[in-house]
Image (cartoon, rainbow, N blue to C red; front, top):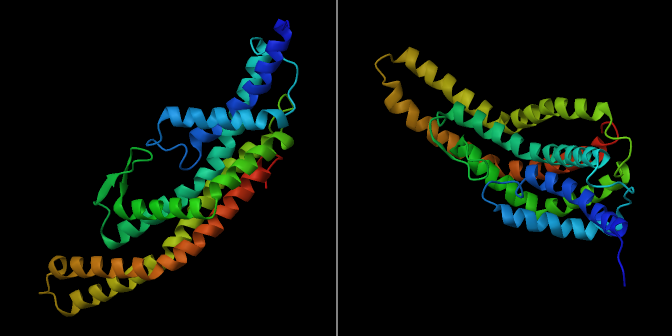
Length: 258
């Protein structure tokens, strides 16, 4: 049995184009793109998903080593990165909410290293990020993300016209949605801490001899932890809504916006 060079090239292209889109998605997606996930594990996942999706993906007859092949690689990387960033905004929402709550209750100085990014984040943000990641896995968000990836090959096939310009603008303006959702999550805690600070302000005016730092700071921390504990059920239910909106946005992103 003889195998020609054209046959090998077509087989390589049929597997190569899905691999770049999958690898770009896993690099930026929640959980999979975290710094604590070894590169070899991420590469193995990308190879496995590419092999599974390759028979379902119509690919053009393009030489992978030509200029047209290089352009296809860039296209697949852009599509994967856009999908991954659209879903990763879920973690940005909870990071923002935790930072706002930390600053309000006086825990802004209590920072720790986020193992997923390696950056310094407040302890409350880390708590919310862990809860969001657990809920994301519990509701099969990772499987839904793979489903969106598979659908993207039908919406934007390999070698098609490319991504609509409106999609880039929709992804850029999605940061406003993340900011609003994070503020909405932090609103109950911020409101409660505002009432506490107003009460301490009245006490300071009524009794100037009162040491506000010695009395107010521990009470503010205690009230902050109580508010976080009371609002956790609402945060967990809101996580499902945020994940659903992010996945819905990602699925409609490639057709010019949701």
